[in-house]
Image (cartoon, rainbow, N blue to C red; front, side):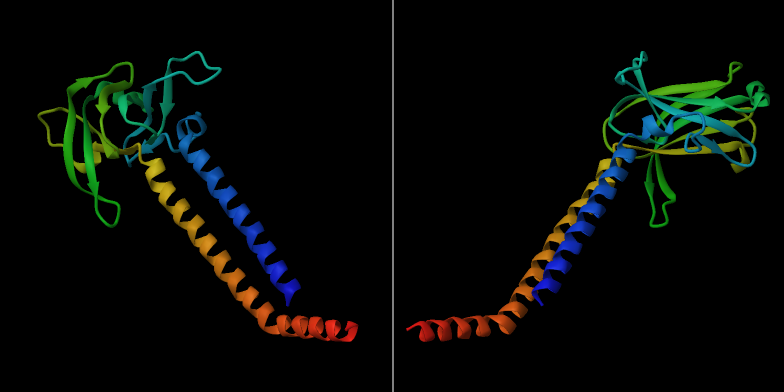
Length: 224
C-alpha cells in the first residue's frame, strides 16, 4: 500500500510538472506573438475575404534585442496598450486603383464570438493608395477586442459586405486570457495532491499502524 501511494504521488507530481511546463511554454508563445508570428510565412498576419486579401501588422514603439528597428511588429494579438500603428499591405495590385476608406472600431463580442456592438475610434476618408499600403494609428488606453474595417470602392457608391474587409485584433488580452486558467489549474492540482495524500495516509494508518504498534509493544514486552 505504501509503495502504491508513493508511486501515485510521484506520477502525479511528474504530470503536474509537465502540464505546467506545457502551459508556460504556450504562454511564452502567446506573449511573444508578434515576434514568432510576424514572419512572412505566418498565416495569422494574412486576412482575406472572397475578393480582397491584405497583410496586417500592428506596430508599437520599442526595440527588440538584437534588431535595428525602433518598432515592434505584431499580428492580431497586440500585447500592451499604447500608441499603435496599424498597417494594411494590399496583396492584389488591382486594388491600388480603388478608393479605400478605413475605420478602427472597438467591439463587444457575443457568446459566439461575433461582434454585436461597435464604437468607432478612428475614421480615415476614402482615397486611393497607389503604393498599396493603408495605414493609420491610435493610442489604445484599455484592453479589449478591436477591428480595422476597410471599405473598397467609391465613397458615394453602395458598399456591400463583399466590399468590406474586417480585420479583428486584440489589445493587452493575452495575459488576461491565460493567467486565470493557469492559476486555477495550479490550485486545483494542489488540492488534488493534498486530498490524495490524506487518503493514502489514512489507508496506511488504518492498515499498518496497529501492526506497528502491536509489534513495538510485543518487542518491549519480550525485552523486559
